[in-house]
Amino acid sequence: MANLVYKRVSTDQQSTDRQNLVLDEAGIEEPVVFEEEGGTSSRLHPLERLKFGDLLTYARPGDTVHISEMFRLVRGTQHILDVLDVLHRDRLALRIHDGAFSAMDLTARHPRTGELLSTVKFMVQTLAAAGELQRDLQRELTYDGLRAAEVKGNKGGRRPAVPAGKAEAVRTAYLEGGSIAALARDHRVSRGAIRTAVADLLPEYTVVDAGTPPPELSVVLDMPGKVADFLRAADLAPVERAVLDQGVTVRRGQGYTLRITAVPAIHRRLLDLCQALSGASAVPAQRKARREYENRVNLHAPTTDLGSQSRSAT
Image 1: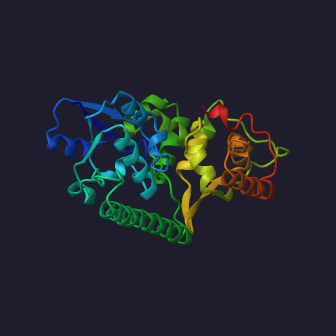
Image 2: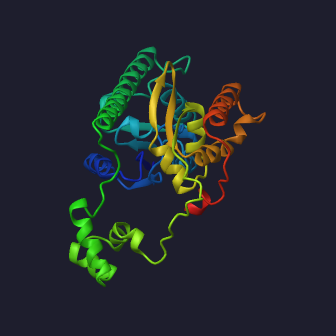
Image 3: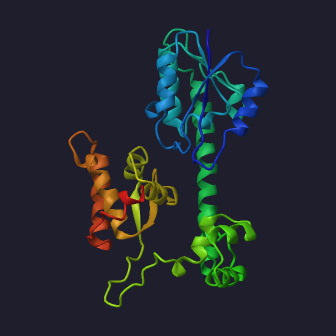
């Protein structure tokens, strides 16, 4: 009987260190590890994830699936119930090593009907709802904090590697003949940071002609959650992926919208990428969600030539 270990993180900035610690302490014998690519969203249904699909293909009856905590595998109540049904069908055991679910036998079923015991289903639904509430509250507090900082004039994002107090000295040294490599060594930063500080002094810098149209300004649009879920699983360029990752989740009853800040060209590109949601294979809710996003894009994001702004970023 094999021990199948599943790991996942939601962003490529996170690591599996905590999961490794929990699983190592569990003393799993001869683990076969299936780890998703960094940035695999928890909103993507587990049964649609690449590595979990590989795990189910590899598994044989009697094997045990090990995870550090339930929310590494599933996000909400329906996800949990769907996964438990598949594990029961394939006669696989599930072992959770940390968190509220670790003390429960989630595979317990009625001896005659074969359905999940009502007490197990109740606990699953209750704990999943509590976990989802906790994550939603964290998102709301984060959004409120960002808004409060914005009102005070503080901008989000990464701070420049060369602070404003040193930028002028860097620029002066560059004008006096200092090389980018030497300045990077002197200030203990990357060459890219120096290039950013002296960008307008570089030979390839082009002065914008007075007759050139001003650059596009970012537009804030609410993307329906069903559209966001589809795009997260799509093949996106880095700039498009970054726009989604930086979106702010806003709860809407049972669903959600993703508040996206991007130039109109990016909104149009995202709209094109979810064209499949207008087809016959999409469910009515998906078609409606795409129409809503399309209406918002048409109203607030005028048509532009996108060619050099999206795929060129790759």
